Length: 146
Ligand SMILES: Cc1cc2nc3c(=O)[nH]c(=O)nc-3n(C[C@H](O)[C@H](O)[C@H](O)COP(=O)(O)O)c2cc1C
Image (cartoon, rainbow, N blue to C red; front, side):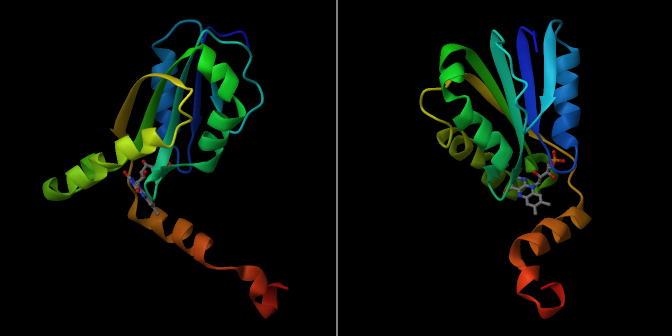
């Protein structure tokens, strides 16, 4: 990876990838990587994005911040989150917007953060069934799955 700007993103259902691709396409000399990846190189700047689930970035995006903590302390970093503020009723929107400062607070304090932006992605009601059931069931405890 010899790109001057690395755009790296974590997605479950593709909205964050779409936004990352739009950002990368607008910038010459950028490279784009889905997380997790070890192909990071030595870019001059980073643009990092993650989908937001239950108020937080996806684990692979948080892992990236930790794993590359030293590199990210030496270069400017822009971040974006993809959630659902624009999909909510007007009165519920401030609640979703209030997640942004908490997301940024979870970043390592050494990061040279220039800006963070919260986008609204595609919100599919059916998607909520899979992550919720995957998280709460331990199938290996079930006799059929042993
Ligand atoms: C189970 C579930 C939990 C979610 N939690 C949040 C949340 O806490 N905050 C938020 O803004 N959006 C939340 N969303 C909306 C997703 O962030 C939104 O659909 C986003 O576009 C997903 O990005 P992706 O397609 O890159 O995975 C949630 C969606 C699902 C299905």
